[in-house]
Length: 265
Image (tube, rainbow, N blue to C red):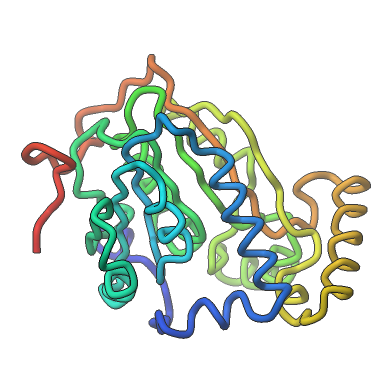
């Protein structure tokens, strides 16, 4: 079980340079802005307790803590959390916890929203991670989930790896498979946004406004003339927990005291 749940990140990312490398130049900034805007559009003022699974260096966290809500961020890499804490010392509405997204250390039904972006591809057992998320969500709570697309260009390039190793890493997913797994744990899909027909690696090499505009036009054309998932890099999905969902007791892991049930230390 330990090996099954072990995340497979092959190298430790530097929190000081992650943002500038992953979202380099103007094109990368546009990609980040699109993702963050989509997340913000799916949030409401009534969302008072928000869990972010996999904060990284805080690209999304720093936008969340501007809200009138209690934010909890988890990451396996303590350096990432220290990076966030050092840059947001004045904020009192954010708790940071070193934890595995596949073994969430919280009581059941405590969060209004769970946000999980650029994490699913690294999980040793993605289905286990989704069950954990379903457990900590309140009834009618929302999941904002991002996952890389099996039918995208990445899937084509990784086809040989899939033939030889019978898997891909980082993992890729079909939207229908994710939706089926969510239904099994009582979450119904509300909206899906399929992003970036033009690969992000091209965007992040774009430094001028003109180049970015051209990429935007090409991406829009491809969105209109191709199937939503075909050659799309990733999907951001919004799902809600059904009031009729009943999670099995053996799928609820850690219970603790009042508040959010955070594990100290």
